[in-house]
Length: 107
Image: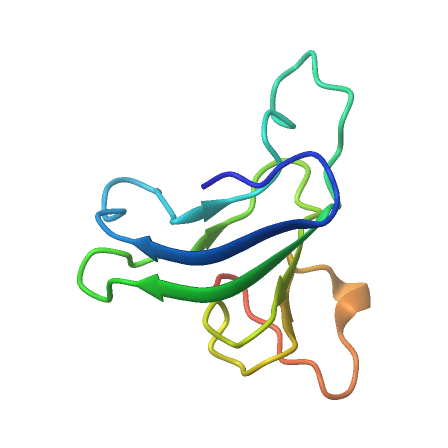
């Protein structure tokens, strides 16, 4: 699933299997932002709820793509494993704030 280039997209009740090849991940960010002719640079908010990732065949949940500006809001904790109302976004030093847990990749 690759996120859209619009705001307010919701991904709900989705099950992910068989993403255990190369650098594949269940969720990618910004549809076609990586294309040379694209005039979009990402930074859209996408919400997630009631997801399942098969632990045997999905080693990577999120793959941030160019321009590395996605905002992923986890409504119930099934994306990040950090509980309801948690967020996932690419790492930038300015995001280091008290109370935030940072990681390079969501597994």
